Amino acid sequence: MGNSKRKGFPILFRKIPKVDKIMEWESVKEVTASHPRQVVLAAVRQALDSLRAETARGGMADACYEEHAIFQRILYELNRTKRTALRRVINGTGVIIHTNLGRSPLPIAALEEMRNTVSGYCNLEYDLDKGVRGSRSGAVEDLLRQVTGAEAAVVVNNNAAAVLLALATLAQGREVIVSRGELVEIGGSFRIPDVMSQSGAVLREVGTTNRTHPKDYRAAVCGETALLLKVHTSNFTVVGFTSEVAVGELAEIGRESALPVMVDAGCGNLVALTDVVKSAAPSVRDYLDAGADVVTFSGDKLLGGPQAGIIVGRKAQVDRMKTNPLYRALRVDKMTLAVLHGTLRLYADERQARRTIPVLRMLTLGLDELETLARTLARHLRRSLPAGATVRTVRGVSQVGGGSLPHVELPTMLVAITIQGVSAQQLDQRLRNFATPVVGRISQGEFLLDPRTLSREEFPEVASALGAVSVLT
Image (cartoon, rainbow, N blue to C red; front, side, top):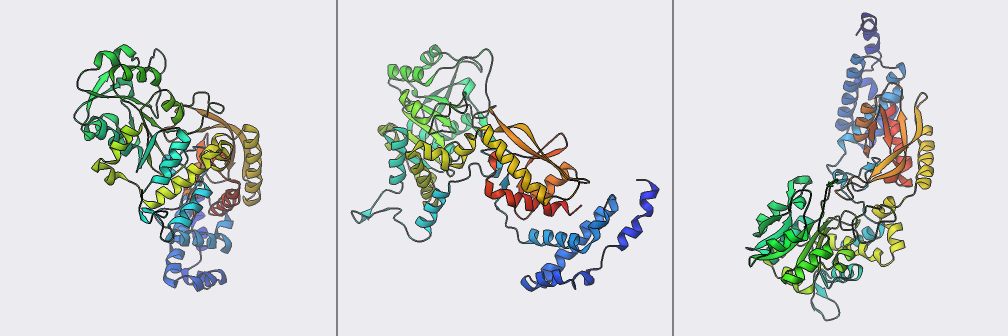
Protein backbone atom coordinates (compact mmCIF):
# COMPACT_ATOMS: atom_id res chain seq x y z
CA MET A 1 0.00 0.00 0.00
CA GLY A 2 1.39 3.44 -0.91
CA ASN A 3 2.46 6.07 1.68
CA SER A 4 -0.30 8.44 0.55
CA LYS A 5 -2.91 5.97 1.66
CA ARG A 6 -1.16 5.29 4.96
CA LYS A 7 -1.16 9.01 5.84
CA GLY A 8 -4.97 9.01 5.80
CA PHE A 9 -5.27 6.16 8.27
CA PRO A 10 -5.20 8.20 11.55
CA ILE A 11 -7.95 10.48 10.23
CA LEU A 12 -10.15 7.53 9.28
CA PHE A 13 -9.61 5.77 12.60
CA ARG A 14 -10.61 8.96 14.45
CA LYS A 15 -13.98 8.76 12.64
CA ILE A 16 -14.78 5.50 14.44
CA PRO A 17 -16.89 6.37 17.51
CA LYS A 18 -16.24 4.99 20.99
CA VAL A 19 -18.32 2.17 22.43
CA ASP A 20 -19.89 4.30 25.19
CA LYS A 21 -20.99 6.95 22.65
CA ILE A 22 -22.61 4.30 20.44
CA MET A 23 -24.48 2.84 23.40
CA GLU A 24 -26.13 6.25 23.81
CA TRP A 25 -27.50 6.34 20.28
CA GLU A 26 -31.29 6.20 20.21
CA SER A 27 -31.23 3.39 17.67
CA VAL A 28 -29.01 1.30 19.93
CA LYS A 29 -31.11 2.12 23.01
CA GLU A 30 -34.17 0.79 21.19
CA VAL A 31 -32.33 -2.47 20.45
CA THR A 32 -31.14 -2.70 24.05
CA ALA A 33 -34.74 -2.49 25.22
CA SER A 34 -35.45 -5.85 23.57
CA HIS A 35 -32.06 -7.55 24.01
CA PRO A 36 -29.76 -8.13 27.01
CA ARG A 37 -27.33 -5.20 27.38
CA GLN A 38 -24.28 -7.49 27.40
CA VAL A 39 -25.37 -9.07 24.11
CA VAL A 40 -25.78 -5.64 22.47
CA LEU A 41 -22.46 -4.51 23.92
CA ALA A 42 -20.71 -7.53 22.45
CA ALA A 43 -22.32 -6.85 19.05
CA VAL A 44 -21.13 -3.21 19.16
CA ARG A 45 -17.56 -4.28 19.91
CA GLN A 46 -17.59 -6.89 17.15
CA ALA A 47 -18.97 -4.31 14.69
CA LEU A 48 -16.20 -1.86 15.58
CA ASP A 49 -13.54 -4.56 15.33
CA SER A 50 -14.67 -5.39 11.78
CA LEU A 51 -14.79 -1.68 10.86
CA ARG A 52 -11.23 -1.14 12.17
CA ALA A 53 -9.99 -4.20 10.26
CA GLU A 54 -11.53 -2.97 7.00
CA THR A 55 -10.21 0.55 7.62
CA ALA A 56 -6.71 -0.88 8.01
CA ARG A 57 -7.05 -2.56 4.61
CA GLY A 58 -7.96 0.78 3.04
CA GLY A 59 -10.48 1.87 0.43
CA MET A 60 -13.29 2.73 2.87
CA ALA A 61 -15.82 5.41 1.88
CA ASP A 62 -16.72 8.21 4.33
CA ALA A 63 -20.33 6.93 4.47
CA CYS A 64 -19.10 3.75 6.21
CA TYR A 65 -18.36 5.78 9.37
CA GLU A 66 -21.80 7.37 9.59
CA GLU A 67 -24.24 6.30 12.31
CA HIS A 68 -26.62 4.49 9.94
CA ALA A 69 -23.84 2.35 8.43
CA ILE A 70 -22.34 1.47 11.81
CA PHE A 71 -25.78 0.62 13.20
CA GLN A 72 -26.31 -1.79 10.29
CA ARG A 73 -23.05 -3.49 11.28
CA ILE A 74 -24.31 -3.80 14.84
CA LEU A 75 -27.58 -5.35 13.68
CA TYR A 76 -25.61 -7.73 11.48
CA GLU A 77 -23.49 -8.87 14.45
CA LEU A 78 -26.54 -9.05 16.71
CA ASN A 79 -28.30 -11.32 14.27
CA ARG A 80 -25.24 -13.58 14.21
CA THR A 81 -25.65 -14.23 17.95
CA LYS A 82 -29.29 -15.33 17.51
CA ARG A 83 -28.66 -17.88 14.79
CA THR A 84 -29.45 -21.51 15.26
CA ALA A 85 -27.11 -24.14 13.87
CA LEU A 86 -29.69 -25.38 11.35
CA ARG A 87 -31.39 -22.55 9.53
CA ARG A 88 -33.51 -21.75 6.51
CA VAL A 89 -31.39 -20.78 3.51
CA ILE A 90 -32.43 -18.98 0.33
CA ASN A 91 -31.13 -20.97 -2.64
CA GLY A 92 -30.19 -18.77 -5.57
CA THR A 93 -27.67 -21.21 -7.05
CA GLY A 94 -29.96 -22.74 -9.67
CA VAL A 95 -29.14 -26.24 -8.39
CA ILE A 96 -32.61 -27.70 -7.82
CA ILE A 97 -31.81 -30.72 -5.65
CA HIS A 98 -28.94 -29.18 -3.68
CA THR A 99 -27.52 -31.85 -1.38
CA ASN A 100 -25.68 -29.28 0.78
CA LEU A 101 -28.87 -27.24 1.19
CA GLY A 102 -31.16 -30.11 2.24
CA ARG A 103 -32.00 -31.55 -1.19
CA SER A 104 -35.67 -31.13 -2.13
CA PRO A 105 -37.75 -28.30 -0.65
CA LEU A 106 -41.03 -29.71 0.60
CA PRO A 107 -44.55 -28.99 -0.71
CA ILE A 108 -46.61 -26.66 1.47
CA ALA A 109 -49.49 -29.15 1.51
CA ALA A 110 -47.18 -31.87 2.85
CA LEU A 111 -45.89 -29.62 5.62
CA GLU A 112 -49.44 -28.70 6.58
CA GLU A 113 -50.35 -32.37 6.74
CA MET A 114 -47.38 -33.03 9.00
CA ARG A 115 -48.28 -30.14 11.32
CA ASN A 116 -51.89 -31.25 11.57
CA THR A 117 -50.95 -34.88 12.10
CA VAL A 118 -48.04 -34.84 14.53
CA SER A 119 -48.54 -31.70 16.63
CA GLY A 120 -50.47 -33.94 19.02
CA TYR A 121 -51.24 -37.64 19.07
CA CYS A 122 -51.93 -39.52 15.85
CA ASN A 123 -52.99 -43.00 14.75
CA LEU A 124 -49.43 -44.01 13.85
CA GLU A 125 -49.95 -47.67 14.77
CA TYR A 126 -53.65 -47.73 15.60
CA ASP A 127 -56.49 -49.00 13.40
CA LEU A 128 -59.32 -46.55 14.11
CA ASP A 129 -61.93 -48.77 12.43
CA LYS A 130 -61.10 -51.92 14.37
CA GLY A 131 -59.77 -50.36 17.57
CA VAL A 132 -56.61 -52.51 17.47
CA ARG A 133 -52.95 -52.07 16.64
CA GLY A 134 -52.47 -51.14 12.98
CA SER A 135 -49.74 -50.78 10.38
CA ARG A 136 -47.23 -47.97 10.93
CA SER A 137 -46.85 -47.11 7.25
CA GLY A 138 -49.96 -48.67 5.73
CA ALA A 139 -51.41 -45.42 4.36
CA VAL A 140 -48.13 -44.43 2.69
CA GLU A 141 -47.72 -47.92 1.24
CA ASP A 142 -51.23 -47.72 -0.24
CA LEU A 143 -50.31 -44.48 -2.03
CA LEU A 144 -47.02 -45.90 -3.27
CA ARG A 145 -48.84 -48.85 -4.79
CA GLN A 146 -51.26 -46.47 -6.51
CA VAL A 147 -48.64 -44.15 -8.02
CA THR A 148 -46.18 -46.86 -9.09
CA GLY A 149 -48.43 -49.82 -9.89
CA ALA A 150 -46.40 -52.03 -7.53
CA GLU A 151 -47.89 -54.96 -5.61
CA ALA A 152 -46.26 -53.88 -2.33
CA ALA A 153 -44.13 -51.15 -0.77
CA VAL A 154 -42.05 -50.43 2.32
CA VAL A 155 -40.32 -47.26 3.56
CA VAL A 156 -37.02 -46.90 5.42
CA ASN A 157 -34.85 -43.92 6.30
CA ASN A 158 -32.88 -43.44 3.04
CA ASN A 159 -32.04 -45.19 -0.20
CA ALA A 160 -28.80 -46.66 1.17
CA ALA A 161 -30.92 -48.31 3.86
CA ALA A 162 -33.37 -49.51 1.23
CA VAL A 163 -30.58 -51.17 -0.77
CA LEU A 164 -29.10 -52.65 2.41
CA LEU A 165 -32.43 -54.11 3.56
CA ALA A 166 -33.27 -55.52 0.13
CA LEU A 167 -29.87 -57.19 -0.30
CA ALA A 168 -29.79 -58.53 3.26
CA THR A 169 -33.23 -60.04 2.78
CA LEU A 170 -32.96 -61.42 -0.74
CA ALA A 171 -29.29 -62.36 -1.06
CA GLN A 172 -27.53 -62.75 2.28
CA GLY A 173 -24.72 -65.29 1.93
CA ARG A 174 -25.29 -65.65 -1.81
CA GLU A 175 -24.15 -63.95 -5.00
CA VAL A 176 -25.58 -60.81 -6.57
CA ILE A 177 -24.67 -60.19 -10.21
CA VAL A 178 -24.07 -56.56 -11.19
CA SER A 179 -22.35 -54.83 -14.10
CA ARG A 180 -18.88 -53.51 -13.34
CA GLY A 181 -19.86 -50.16 -14.84
CA GLU A 182 -22.62 -49.77 -12.22
CA LEU A 183 -20.48 -50.21 -9.08
CA VAL A 184 -20.89 -46.56 -8.18
CA GLU A 185 -19.75 -44.35 -5.33
CA ILE A 186 -21.86 -41.28 -4.58
CA GLY A 187 -21.63 -38.45 -2.04
CA GLY A 188 -20.84 -39.38 1.55
CA SER A 189 -18.76 -42.38 0.37
CA PHE A 190 -21.82 -44.52 -0.35
CA ARG A 191 -20.42 -47.42 -2.38
CA ILE A 192 -22.48 -50.25 -3.80
CA PRO A 193 -19.75 -52.85 -3.07
CA ASP A 194 -19.52 -51.70 0.56
CA VAL A 195 -23.28 -51.81 1.10
CA MET A 196 -23.39 -55.23 -0.50
CA SER A 197 -20.64 -56.48 1.79
CA GLN A 198 -22.44 -55.08 4.85
CA SER A 199 -25.63 -56.85 3.81
CA GLY A 200 -23.89 -60.21 3.72
CA ALA A 201 -24.39 -60.62 -0.03
CA VAL A 202 -21.50 -61.64 -2.28
CA LEU A 203 -20.63 -59.35 -5.19
CA ARG A 204 -20.25 -60.94 -8.62
CA GLU A 205 -19.06 -58.41 -11.19
CA VAL A 206 -19.72 -58.93 -14.90
CA GLY A 207 -18.78 -57.07 -18.05
CA THR A 208 -16.38 -54.16 -18.24
CA THR A 209 -16.53 -50.53 -17.12
CA ASN A 210 -17.99 -49.36 -20.42
CA ARG A 211 -19.65 -52.44 -21.94
CA THR A 212 -21.81 -55.21 -20.47
CA HIS A 213 -23.94 -57.64 -22.50
CA PRO A 214 -26.77 -60.09 -21.72
CA LYS A 215 -24.37 -62.99 -22.28
CA ASP A 216 -22.24 -61.70 -19.38
CA TYR A 217 -25.12 -62.10 -16.95
CA ARG A 218 -26.13 -65.50 -18.33
CA ALA A 219 -22.57 -66.82 -18.05
CA ALA A 220 -22.34 -65.70 -14.41
CA VAL A 221 -25.57 -67.34 -13.21
CA CYS A 222 -24.87 -70.37 -11.04
CA GLY A 223 -26.31 -72.24 -8.07
CA GLU A 224 -25.04 -69.54 -5.70
CA THR A 225 -26.80 -66.69 -7.53
CA ALA A 226 -29.63 -65.04 -5.58
CA LEU A 227 -30.29 -61.79 -7.42
CA LEU A 228 -29.64 -59.75 -10.57
CA LEU A 229 -29.00 -56.09 -9.73
CA LYS A 230 -29.05 -52.99 -11.93
CA VAL A 231 -27.86 -49.67 -10.47
CA HIS A 232 -28.67 -46.17 -11.71
CA THR A 233 -25.26 -44.49 -12.08
CA SER A 234 -26.53 -41.43 -10.20
CA ASN A 235 -23.97 -38.65 -10.66
CA PHE A 236 -21.90 -39.74 -13.64
CA THR A 237 -22.35 -41.07 -17.15
CA VAL A 238 -20.26 -43.33 -19.34
CA VAL A 239 -20.20 -42.06 -22.91
CA GLY A 240 -18.66 -43.18 -26.18
CA PHE A 241 -18.12 -46.88 -26.87
CA THR A 242 -20.68 -48.20 -24.38
CA SER A 243 -23.28 -50.90 -23.95
CA GLU A 244 -25.56 -51.80 -21.06
CA VAL A 245 -28.33 -54.29 -20.47
CA ALA A 246 -31.78 -52.71 -20.17
CA VAL A 247 -34.12 -53.69 -17.35
CA GLY A 248 -36.41 -55.54 -19.76
CA GLU A 249 -33.53 -57.70 -21.01
CA LEU A 250 -32.35 -58.32 -17.45
CA ALA A 251 -35.89 -59.34 -16.45
CA GLU A 252 -35.93 -61.87 -19.28
CA ILE A 253 -32.68 -63.38 -17.99
CA GLY A 254 -34.18 -63.42 -14.50
CA ARG A 255 -37.22 -65.34 -15.72
CA GLU A 256 -35.02 -67.85 -17.55
CA SER A 257 -33.04 -68.47 -14.37
CA ALA A 258 -35.91 -68.09 -11.85
CA LEU A 259 -34.04 -65.17 -10.25
CA PRO A 260 -35.50 -61.85 -9.03
CA VAL A 261 -34.30 -58.62 -10.62
CA MET A 262 -33.68 -55.54 -8.48
CA VAL A 263 -33.17 -51.97 -9.71
CA ASP A 264 -31.55 -49.31 -7.54
CA ALA A 265 -33.17 -46.35 -9.30
CA GLY A 266 -31.49 -43.75 -7.09
CA CYS A 267 -33.37 -40.53 -7.85
CA GLY A 268 -36.67 -42.33 -8.46
CA ASN A 269 -38.93 -40.00 -10.46
CA LEU A 270 -42.64 -40.88 -10.27
CA VAL A 271 -43.67 -38.98 -13.40
CA ALA A 272 -42.18 -39.05 -16.91
CA LEU A 273 -39.89 -36.05 -17.41
CA THR A 274 -38.89 -36.59 -21.01
CA ASP A 275 -40.97 -33.59 -22.09
CA VAL A 276 -38.54 -31.45 -20.06
CA VAL A 277 -35.32 -33.48 -20.23
CA LYS A 278 -34.95 -35.89 -23.15
CA SER A 279 -32.29 -37.87 -21.27
CA ALA A 280 -34.42 -38.29 -18.15
CA ALA A 281 -34.23 -41.70 -16.49
CA PRO A 282 -37.27 -44.01 -16.71
CA SER A 283 -39.88 -43.58 -14.00
CA VAL A 284 -40.29 -46.12 -11.20
CA ARG A 285 -43.44 -47.43 -12.93
CA ASP A 286 -41.43 -47.88 -16.15
CA TYR A 287 -38.93 -50.10 -14.33
CA LEU A 288 -41.71 -52.20 -12.84
CA ASP A 289 -43.52 -52.46 -16.17
CA ALA A 290 -40.25 -53.62 -17.76
CA GLY A 291 -40.18 -56.56 -15.36
CA ALA A 292 -38.19 -55.48 -12.30
CA ASP A 293 -39.24 -57.37 -9.17
CA VAL A 294 -37.89 -54.78 -6.72
CA VAL A 295 -37.10 -51.07 -7.21
CA THR A 296 -35.44 -48.85 -4.58
CA PHE A 297 -35.24 -45.05 -4.70
CA SER A 298 -34.92 -41.87 -2.63
CA GLY A 299 -37.77 -39.78 -1.28
CA ASP A 300 -35.94 -36.45 -1.31
CA LYS A 301 -34.73 -36.27 -4.91
CA LEU A 302 -37.00 -36.18 -7.97
CA LEU A 303 -39.96 -37.40 -5.90
CA GLY A 304 -39.74 -34.06 -4.06
CA GLY A 305 -40.48 -35.31 -0.54
CA PRO A 306 -38.60 -35.95 2.71
CA GLN A 307 -35.48 -38.06 3.18
CA ALA A 308 -36.62 -41.67 2.86
CA GLY A 309 -35.67 -44.91 1.16
CA ILE A 310 -38.58 -46.44 -0.73
CA ILE A 311 -38.84 -50.06 -1.85
CA VAL A 312 -41.62 -51.14 -4.23
CA GLY A 313 -42.19 -54.35 -6.14
CA ARG A 314 -43.50 -57.90 -5.90
CA LYS A 315 -45.41 -58.68 -2.73
CA ALA A 316 -43.46 -61.88 -2.10
CA GLN A 317 -40.11 -60.07 -1.97
CA VAL A 318 -41.28 -56.91 -0.17
CA ASP A 319 -43.15 -58.83 2.55
CA ARG A 320 -39.95 -60.73 3.33
CA MET A 321 -38.19 -57.41 3.95
CA LYS A 322 -40.86 -56.33 6.44
CA THR A 323 -40.14 -59.40 8.58
CA ASN A 324 -36.36 -58.86 8.54
CA PRO A 325 -35.18 -57.67 12.02
CA LEU A 326 -33.08 -55.05 10.22
CA TYR A 327 -36.27 -53.30 9.09
CA ARG A 328 -37.08 -52.11 12.62
CA ALA A 329 -33.67 -50.43 12.88
CA LEU A 330 -34.21 -48.64 9.56
CA ARG A 331 -37.86 -47.62 9.73
CA VAL A 332 -38.97 -43.98 9.66
CA ASP A 333 -40.78 -41.84 12.23
CA LYS A 334 -44.24 -40.26 12.18
CA MET A 335 -43.01 -36.90 10.83
CA THR A 336 -41.36 -38.48 7.79
CA LEU A 337 -44.43 -40.63 7.13
CA ALA A 338 -46.75 -37.62 7.40
CA VAL A 339 -44.68 -35.49 4.97
CA LEU A 340 -44.24 -38.39 2.56
CA HIS A 341 -47.97 -39.12 2.66
CA GLY A 342 -48.76 -35.46 1.98
CA THR A 343 -46.34 -35.41 -0.96
CA LEU A 344 -47.57 -38.66 -2.51
CA ARG A 345 -51.20 -37.46 -2.35
CA LEU A 346 -50.28 -34.70 -4.80
CA TYR A 347 -49.32 -37.31 -7.41
CA ALA A 348 -52.96 -38.36 -7.82
CA ASP A 349 -53.10 -35.61 -10.47
CA GLU A 350 -49.87 -35.19 -12.45
CA ARG A 351 -50.72 -31.61 -13.41
CA GLN A 352 -51.22 -30.79 -9.73
CA ALA A 353 -47.94 -32.51 -8.86
CA ARG A 354 -45.99 -30.44 -11.38
CA ARG A 355 -47.56 -27.27 -10.04
CA THR A 356 -47.36 -27.86 -6.27
CA ILE A 357 -44.24 -30.00 -5.72
CA PRO A 358 -41.35 -27.49 -5.74
CA VAL A 359 -38.81 -29.79 -7.42
CA LEU A 360 -41.16 -30.58 -10.31
CA ARG A 361 -42.24 -26.95 -10.62
CA MET A 362 -38.62 -25.77 -10.83
CA LEU A 363 -37.74 -28.49 -13.34
CA THR A 364 -40.58 -27.58 -15.65
CA LEU A 365 -40.19 -23.78 -15.65
CA GLY A 366 -39.92 -22.49 -19.21
CA LEU A 367 -37.38 -19.92 -20.36
CA ASP A 368 -40.07 -17.26 -20.99
CA GLU A 369 -41.27 -17.53 -17.39
CA LEU A 370 -37.70 -17.48 -16.10
CA GLU A 371 -37.01 -14.29 -18.06
CA THR A 372 -40.04 -12.66 -16.43
CA LEU A 373 -38.90 -13.81 -12.99
CA ALA A 374 -35.37 -12.51 -13.59
CA ARG A 375 -36.65 -9.07 -14.62
CA THR A 376 -38.89 -8.94 -11.55
CA LEU A 377 -36.02 -9.90 -9.24
CA ALA A 378 -33.77 -7.32 -10.89
CA ARG A 379 -36.33 -4.57 -10.21
CA HIS A 380 -36.46 -5.52 -6.52
CA LEU A 381 -32.66 -5.43 -6.30
CA ARG A 382 -32.25 -2.07 -8.02
CA ARG A 383 -34.58 -0.45 -5.47
CA SER A 384 -32.46 -1.75 -2.57
CA LEU A 385 -28.89 -1.40 -3.81
CA PRO A 386 -26.82 1.80 -3.51
CA ALA A 387 -25.84 4.06 -6.38
CA GLY A 388 -23.06 2.56 -8.42
CA ALA A 389 -24.40 -0.98 -8.17
CA THR A 390 -25.11 -2.79 -11.43
CA VAL A 391 -27.89 -5.32 -11.93
CA ARG A 392 -28.37 -7.06 -15.25
CA THR A 393 -29.96 -10.23 -16.61
CA VAL A 394 -27.88 -12.77 -18.54
CA ARG A 395 -28.46 -16.18 -20.11
CA GLY A 396 -27.18 -19.21 -18.20
CA VAL A 397 -27.93 -22.78 -17.16
CA SER A 398 -29.42 -24.47 -14.10
CA GLN A 399 -28.59 -27.95 -12.83
CA VAL A 400 -30.82 -30.69 -11.45
CA GLY A 401 -28.29 -31.76 -8.80
CA GLY A 402 -28.52 -34.39 -6.08
CA GLY A 403 -27.10 -37.14 -8.28
CA SER A 404 -30.18 -36.89 -10.50
CA LEU A 405 -29.98 -36.50 -14.28
CA PRO A 406 -26.19 -35.98 -14.36
CA HIS A 407 -24.82 -33.46 -16.86
CA VAL A 408 -28.29 -32.16 -17.73
CA GLU A 409 -28.23 -28.37 -18.14
CA LEU A 410 -31.50 -26.43 -18.11
CA PRO A 411 -31.54 -23.05 -19.91
CA THR A 412 -32.24 -20.20 -17.51
CA MET A 413 -31.99 -16.42 -17.09
CA LEU A 414 -29.61 -15.24 -14.35
CA VAL A 415 -29.43 -11.95 -12.45
CA ALA A 416 -25.86 -10.64 -12.20
CA ILE A 417 -24.97 -8.16 -9.43
CA THR A 418 -21.87 -5.99 -9.02
CA ILE A 419 -21.41 -3.45 -6.22
CA GLN A 420 -18.71 -0.80 -6.36
CA GLY A 421 -15.94 -1.54 -3.88
CA VAL A 422 -17.18 -5.05 -3.09
CA SER A 423 -15.82 -8.13 -4.82
CA ALA A 424 -18.10 -11.00 -5.79
CA GLN A 425 -16.34 -13.15 -3.18
CA GLN A 426 -16.98 -10.56 -0.44
CA LEU A 427 -20.61 -10.26 -1.45
CA ASP A 428 -20.99 -14.04 -1.45
CA GLN A 429 -19.50 -14.31 2.04
CA ARG A 430 -21.61 -11.53 3.52
CA LEU A 431 -24.82 -12.96 2.11
CA ARG A 432 -23.96 -16.43 3.45
CA ASN A 433 -23.54 -14.85 6.89
CA PHE A 434 -26.74 -12.83 6.77
CA ALA A 435 -29.58 -13.55 9.24
CA THR A 436 -31.33 -15.59 6.56
CA PRO A 437 -28.42 -16.71 4.37
CA VAL A 438 -28.62 -16.16 0.63
CA VAL A 439 -26.50 -18.56 -1.43
CA GLY A 440 -25.71 -17.77 -5.05
CA ARG A 441 -22.81 -18.46 -7.38
CA ILE A 442 -19.88 -16.55 -8.84
CA SER A 443 -18.80 -16.39 -12.47
CA GLN A 444 -16.32 -14.05 -14.17
CA GLY A 445 -16.23 -11.67 -11.22
CA GLU A 446 -19.99 -11.30 -10.88
CA PHE A 447 -22.32 -12.59 -8.18
CA LEU A 448 -25.21 -14.47 -9.80
CA LEU A 449 -28.70 -15.46 -8.68
CA ASP A 450 -30.85 -17.97 -10.55
CA PRO A 451 -34.61 -17.35 -10.16
CA ARG A 452 -35.32 -21.00 -11.03
CA THR A 453 -34.62 -21.97 -7.39
CA LEU A 454 -36.14 -18.85 -5.82
CA SER A 455 -39.79 -18.22 -5.09
CA ARG A 456 -41.40 -14.86 -5.80
CA GLU A 457 -42.03 -14.52 -2.05
CA GLU A 458 -38.26 -14.61 -1.48
CA PHE A 459 -37.47 -11.72 -3.87
CA PRO A 460 -38.03 -8.97 -1.24
CA GLU A 461 -35.90 -10.91 1.28
CA VAL A 462 -33.06 -11.23 -1.22
CA ALA A 463 -33.27 -7.52 -2.02
CA SER A 464 -33.29 -6.60 1.66
CA ALA A 465 -30.26 -8.81 2.34
CA LEU A 466 -28.28 -7.32 -0.53
CA GLY A 467 -29.23 -3.81 0.55
CA ALA A 468 -28.09 -4.49 4.12
CA VAL A 469 -24.73 -6.10 3.25
CA SER A 470 -23.90 -3.44 0.66
CA VAL A 471 -23.72 -0.73 3.37
CA LEU A 472 -20.97 -2.70 5.13
CA THR A 473 -18.52 -1.43 2.57
